[in-house]
Length: 211
Image (cartoon, rainbow, N blue to C red; front, top):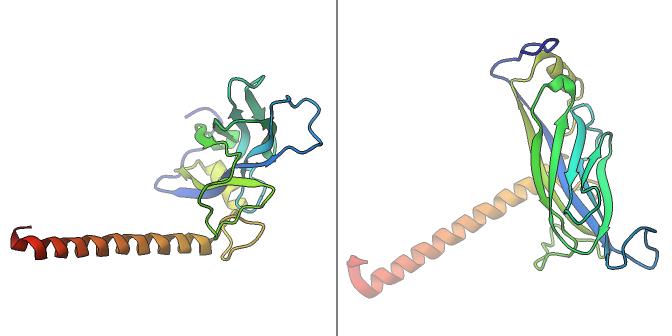
C-alpha cells in the first residue's frame, strides 16, 4: 500500500451514478471565429452527475480523445464542468478517460462514446429530441469496490447524485424511466415467447407430433 493511503474497507462497495454523452446543433449564421468552413455542427461532450451535480469530489480530471483530424486531439479538462465544446461535420468515437481524485487511489476509468450529430431514425416518443438540438446521453454507475477509509469518508460526506423518482425536464434519466424500460423489456420477452409458442403449435399441427 503506498505511503499516506489508508487501508481499504473489505467487502464494501459504494456506487455513484453519472451520465455522459453529447449534445449537438447545426451551426447558424453566427459561427465560432475559428470554425473551419466545412464544419456544420456545434457539439459538446461531457461527464456529469445525473442532475448536473458537482462530481469533482470523486473526479479529478477527464481526458477526451477526439478524432486525429482535430488539432491537439487529446483534450484534458481539470475542473468541473467536465465538458468540451467543438465544431465538426462528422460523427466519430470519442475515448473518455476519467481520473479520480488522489484520495481514491483508484485506476482511471475508460469509456467510449459515439459522437451523435444527427437525429435517430426511430425517435422514441418517451425521449423526445429538441428540434434544434440532438442529445445522445447514457447513464452509468461507477462502483468503488473496497474503497479506502479516507475516500469512503469523502463519499459519505456527499451521498447525493441519486436519480429522481419521476421524469423531469432537467434530468434525462429517472427511476420512473428505468422502470418503464424494464416493463418494455418484459413485454418484448413475452411477445417473443408467445410468437415462438404459436409457431411451434402451428408446426406441430401441420407435421404431427414429430415437430
